[in-house]
Image (tube, rainbow, N blue to C red; front, side):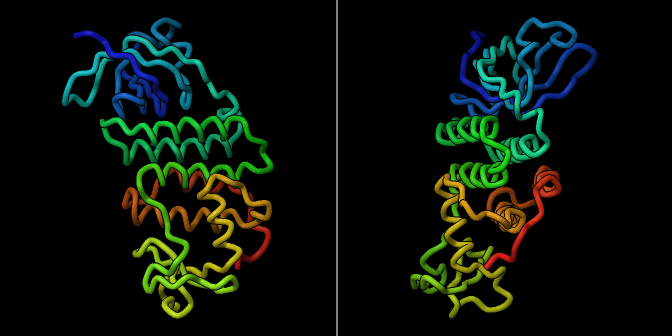
Length: 253
């Protein structure tokens, strides 16, 4: 069997036996791949020196159709993203991205998802710490959107009426978007006012709001949306991320 070569991002690695490792990659040409790297522990050969989580490069592997585990021949990293491992908040954000992909992606190529993952890991590695919470939120929404799930902020998900500039609606998790004031009763979900809608819209577009002083509340909404629409269960890494986020500084309206 001839090996295949594909751009890949290493999302998770753990030891197997005395000398080998299991490596889980998201790849451009083959989607999610789990590989075994035999005999790499304790020496730098076969890509051993480059096998750090969140690094990108070229993966060479023997891929068997319909198999769950494949054999890695080599992984040559060209982007180590070393800063991610040096900062708890960066690491927590990247871990959420990785778990999201590992939980929902399949062994089928999704180029838009691969591009989103690469771009957002690059951003988390390079961006300044002062705006890191917003960058993590935006990165997660970008990857969620690449899976095909994006919340509807306007018009109302029930009656299709456009919300007014000063209108306070509610976020309906089941419907996947914002209800206007007329449709949103108290039990429909959290209040989402004009400031929150504008901030969320900026995050969805990849921009970082200048006034994002309540990132934990945004993270709570994102976590609930993921559990309802993407993976149908809470992501473990989101709890770690929430514990790392700075406290909110004001009440969101």
